[in-house]
Image 1 (cartoon, rainbow, N blue to C red):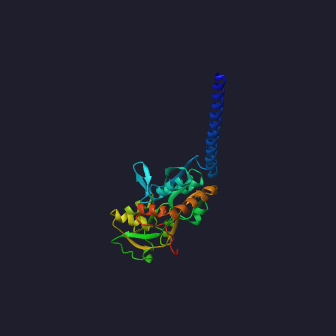
Image 2: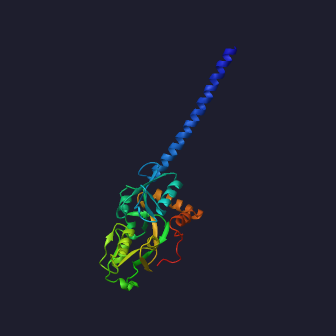
Image 3: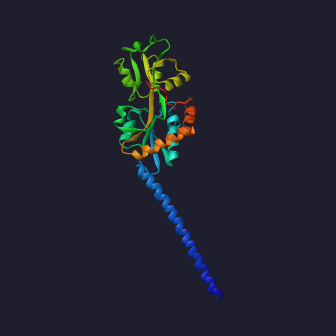
Length: 272
């Protein structure tokens, strides 16, 4: 009789363990299915990963430290990936080809200081701005350029594929295009070109790093957004929600101050 009771006890105990194991397996399957569903909803290049592109040549927004990119753009991309529960994967690419890469599905997004323009909106969607900037005229200190009118017919260098190309065309046809804004400013300081048009933050950072150049006036204010493939509306919506949370929590401003030195996340009262 005692042996029968022992056998019955172990039989019941085994059933309880099996039931617990079944619940655990179902929970794991549910979690896995939920994650896969989210990945599928976002239509990612690779499940569980947020592949983002940046140039790595635009300090303090994206630049190389060893074999990795760092900077404000990179920090923003990584913060967004964290909010979405995805692994951030950075891809270094030439600035002029990044929008095309998003359009063709090579990258999920581009966090590369792209100014939101009508031309770019024909190829990709953009999130709400994650920072604000604006084009500025830079010259050497011995330059006789002191106003916008003085740019007429001058040699103005800009980064290839940037919005500054169209701005420069308003003043001249002599527009050498180089791989990055930093290269253009370095060339200017070395005695080449008459002027460079780039954003204020890049120019001021170059001056802090020792380049002998001067700010000769701002030409306007621009909005920088994150590029997303037009067929990925769910991802666009999720990133906008993440950006809003980052703004409301103050984290976005903190990242800006950490990498740039000032808060560039606040929308100006007027856009010219």
